[in-house]
Image (tube, rainbow, N blue to C red; front, top):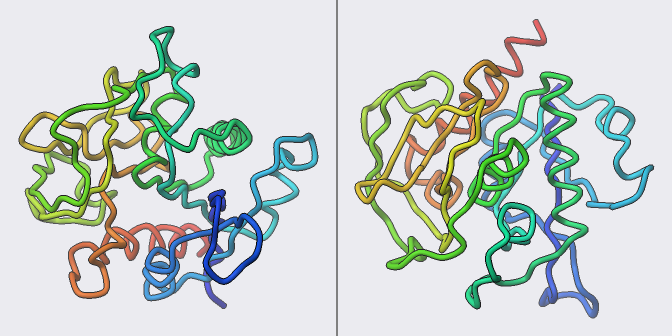
Amino acid sequence: MRTRIAILGRFAHSVSCLRHPGVVVSRPILESLWRAGAEPLMLLPIDEPAGMDWSSRLAGFDGIVMPGGADLNPTRYTDEPVDPHVYDVDDVQDAADISLIQWARHHEFPLLAVCRGLQVLNVAMGGTLEQHFDPTHQHLRHDVAITTAHDLIGIAKESANVSCHHHQRVARVADGLTVVARAADGTVEAVVGTHEPNIVAVQWHPEDTSAADPVQQQVFDAFVQRLVDAAR
């Protein structure tokens, strides 16, 4: 039986095959998890008591993936005016993401966060974001230096070439998170829980290239393998 992984869906204003707004997860991230031996299943973000009852909703699941998506509402981490580059803010999405992260931490539930997922994790733990930086890391391939926690990230090398698509980045790192990878410009590219080994997050999108790049597939392989080992 495959390891079951919950992925919180992302609201989309339009989906080409539907007549209505959608709730989506990117195909590459689902396929990456499937190749790693998991059964990925999407959950609907709901901002109501039943929707936040994660103990019930996650019964039978082994781990959580918090995927990329649109921007987090800046009012959650700063009093500064909202930068005009901030896009597609959705307060229901934000509330569900933060609630799920808090639940995962409280229950020591395995969590892999990607791109927006890392940013929400940082804010949920008390850190802040830079609302926009220039030049951005949108549509960009670049190298990252991985300093430690190679076993948690799944990449044994000290550097890796990664695919990024983000215009925001971590400003102040939350207490309780340790930076384990950075880009040449100093951008935080990966963090792990300082005392919470169940938490792993990368700013880049390993799913973008994982089908052809075994190094990026290892991010998913390592996460799923930890779930398998924990179940033994």
